[in-house]
Structure formats: C-alpha cells, structure tokens
Image (cartoon, rainbow, N blue to C red; front, side, top):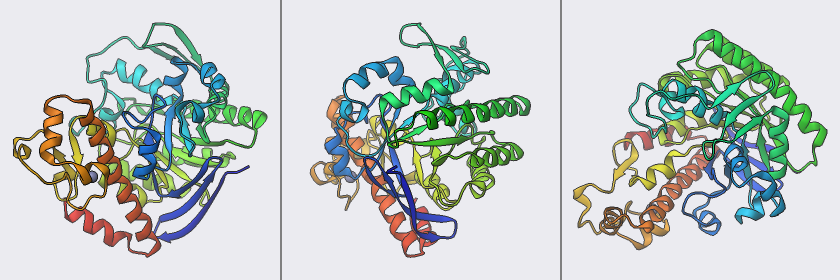
Length: 400
Ligand SMILES: [Zn+2]
C-alpha cells in the first residue's frame, strides 16, 4: 500500500503533513481542485501543475452518468483519460443525492443551503420546488439521470466498484447528505443509514482492494452536536484510511466552526481529514486551525468564470473585474502575483475579455484564482512549520 500520512509540524490544532498516494505526494494542508467532469474547467493538466495544484477531485456520480465508468476503464482509467498523472480523488455522489433530491424538493441547493442566511454563494438550485429525482432506501439510492431521464441505482458496494474502475488514488464512500431544513429525527435516521452504508462500503473495499487506492469515510449528522459526535466516533471506529466531514455544516459560518469543533477532535489523530465543500479564505483559515488537512470547493473556479477574482486587499478578498473602474486600469489583477495571468495581462484587458464574453477570460481568471489559493496554502504550510499560523491569519484577515 502506497498510502501514507505523516504529520511534520503542528501549530495548535493545525497540522502540516505529507500525504503519499500511488500517484505522488500531497503536502498538507492542501486545497483540492474540483474537476467534476474529469477536468478542472478550462485548464489543462500542464497549466494546473504550473499553478501548483497538487490534487484534483472528480465526481463519481457525474462520470457514471457520462461517459460511464466502463468507458473510462477501457481508456485506461481516470488518470490516463484526463491526462493527469498526479494524485486524484473521487467523490461518491452523496452530495448529488442531496442536491438533486432533497435540495431540489425543498427549493435549496447544497451551497446555498449550507449557509442559507448568507446570500448567493453560487448554489445551483435557487429555483422553486421540483419533483425529487432521488429515492433513498436501506439498500441505496435510486435516481433519475438529469441528462436523459434514465434510471440508476447506487449502493455502497456498487459505488466502490465504480470508483475502482475510475481508479482514483483516494475514493469516498457513499453517504447521504441532509439539508439544514431536515429535522433532527430525519437527520438522525439518515446518519444511521450512512453508518450502515459506510460499513458495507468498507467491507466491499477490503474484499476487492489492490492496495493502490485509499478509502475515506464520511462523518454526517448535520448541525446537531450529539449526532456529529456520534457520527465522528462511529466512522472513526472503522478502519478507513482517512476521514471526511460532509453534509450540512449549519446555517452560518459560526455553526460551521462549531461542527468542526465537535467533530475534528474525535477523528483519529494520525490520519488525514478532508472537509467537503469549503474554499474561501476565511473558511480555509477556520478549517486549518481546527485541524483539517484537505478541502475542496467549486467556489474559486466558479467565481473566476463569473469574473470574481481573488485579491488580498479587498472586501472578502474579491474583485469584480467587470466594474467600470477597471476599464483603463493597466495594473495586473494583483500586484506582485506570480501567476501567468498577472505576469502578462492588465485588469483593463481582463475586463474587456469578460465584457466581450471571450473564452480566454474564464481561463485567465481561473488561473489567477487557483494560483492565489495555492500561494495562500504555501504560506499556511510554512506558517504551521514556524508556529505562526495565528499571526499569518491576522495579517490576512486584517487586509480584507
Ligand atoms: Zn495572478
């Protein structure tokens, strides 16, 4: 087994480490770039490498529906198929169970519903209520493809089998995400089902393992303290290679911090911890200082495609490049940024590309946002090594 995690430095609850996978090393804490459809939208693997991206997470649910795990298997597996030979993860589809099922039914999406008190965080279903596409039962999940209306069935064992064919280095178990709109009783029932699924997934994984993939369990339990603690203890008692925290993290950032504070201390100390779905600067500091090693989020790339660029000295670290003030601004997005975009182009040019709806706009903006995050992560790892994470956080948060 190639999988190995070594903690190299600590600063309070934060850790820096080295996570070795079959396809290489991840220095943690690390951002995991989202490549849902086996691509980080608009960029090539060479560009991702140049930016400093260490690991990508693709989505089992989407790749199962299109082009199908059989085809990807025939093409030599996901690494070869997408031309990325570095560390790769696959998410199981639990999030989609939620966002296309309960989320749709209740008229909220995952991102919006994680923080329903905060305005648009780019959640997908801001729409009215619609018929659910998903039915959850003890055996697994029945759902209808959003692409062609065909019927599909996911079980904990079946998802492991799909993830085997895809061949990512780190794979996740099938879980059921609940919405903050679900009550305590439903959240408990879903959590208990998720626990039974976790055990089944692990059995299937151990039965079929080739030693090349690592399996992460997922803690659920919504924003309820006793459920989160129970879930963290139960999932930790199973022999997973790492542990993810999934599902609804409450109605506000404060509640998200609480969920982390209840959960993380109960996870095994020596194994990696992944937080699903978080990727803004304040959230990254909040997660890292509570002991998270890996996190993924669509926000940095999605925001880039909408012309929202990450910058240090601005409210919430954001610049809206379409603002009129940048029309004739010759400066790069961020002075001193070493990314390809900032080394070559002005704000005025970027703004023009967005106004003209040119494809290059999205590429250049994505390059910058990912580079910005990677450079933040490098600073965070160095700060943990030097015991000055709190100082780095103060520097960053006082500038926004
Ligand atoms: Zn830049």
